[in-house]
Amino acid sequence: MRCACISLGKSIVVLAIFLLLTLPASAQNVVFVVIDGARYSETFGDPQRTYVPAMEALSHQGTLVDEFYNDGFTYTSRAIPALWCGSWTEVADTTYEGIDTQYAVDPTIFEYYRKQKGAGEDSCFYVLKYIFSLWLPSFHQEYGPGYWPTIHSEGGSDIDVLHETLQVIQSHHPQLLWVYFADVDHEGHSGDWERYTRAIQIADSLVGVLWGALQADPVYQNTTTMIVTNDHGRHDDEHGGFSGHGCGCDGCRHIMLLAVGPELRRDFVSTRTRVLPDATVTAMHLLEIRPEYSTGAVMDELFESTDVASRKAVRVPAQFTLLQNVPNPFNPVTTIAYSMAKPGTVRLAVYDVRGRLVAVLRQGYAGAETYRAVFNGNGFPSGVYFYRLTVDGMQQNRRMTMVK
Ligand SMILES: [Zn+2]
Ligand SMILES: [Zn+2]
Image (cartoon, rainbow, N blue to C red; front, side, top):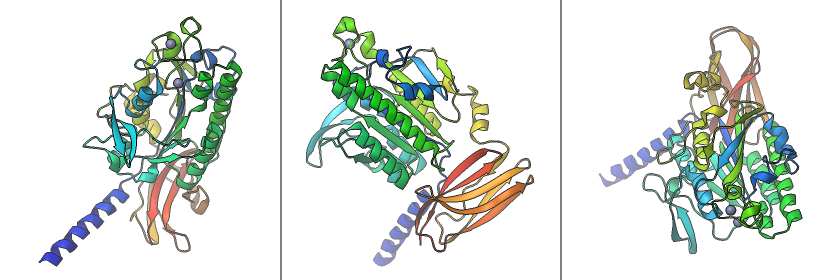
């Protein structure tokens, strides 16, 4: 009897893991970039865009929020958790794995994503420089450590962080990637204007390189939204100037928000006033997750279509549907079905987790019906693969797992 119980328990665990792995993946990826402590007057508040030429160029492919504000605490230890949570969460002290640190009380975007999507830890990455006592996501009873992102804390500069980010992109292709650049705030505190503005120029160029890398990657290209913002600004010149921050002056509160992605308006400047938690809740909306404990609002005005029903139509083009492969996980053969509502030129291809082409399953003209293509993973290693259906230039991606 006892043995039977144990083996039943094991079967349930195996079944639960199987169900988690078979949940369909979202077609949208989000890359969220935080540039710590850049003042608006040196980013998009400067009509010449002197220090942000790369983001200036990107803004013509996306939307700029001109009236975006930190509406709470204008320092990093509260504003970063607020960005994680989409709310001005409380933070609390703790000792975690022997190190004194703080955690966010409300659940974070990472936890919402992983729990609601049934997604594994490599679906969600937080990349930042090496920090000894990392601030932590929540211990919320419904979310918590089982849903934290993979925290990749390496290197010492923003350039190192970009390098690590590119590695993470190549080897894991997370669907939610959070990148934190710390140098602008650090250099601002030095009080040296040259160093401060140089750090902004570097962060700007890194954002440009990151977007270029995403667009060169078959998994991310045309399916990824990047949001770039700040946790806080810096004092305006009447309140102490750029070497400090932390008060309620306009310099500390006014921050930038740039969003670029397939569903967002292009070359658009929004003048509606928005606040810091709205950035995260908009990211959650893109990822199709519920911001249960967040207080922010979705910034509808950034989207190509503000009507939710037609937004769905933009996201999942009515002309074709790509279904989750069956079975998934598979060993080594699986079937991928797609249906065409009207005729078009089709390409169905499989990529490995590094974005390298593995197989082209279909290529050519297809009429309006449902098709099934078989992928045989013989000769390829176990792991995560992506398959992409392109129809007349529009595309959908899905993720699948081969377990041998
Ligand atoms: Zn600071
Ligand atoms: Zn201030």
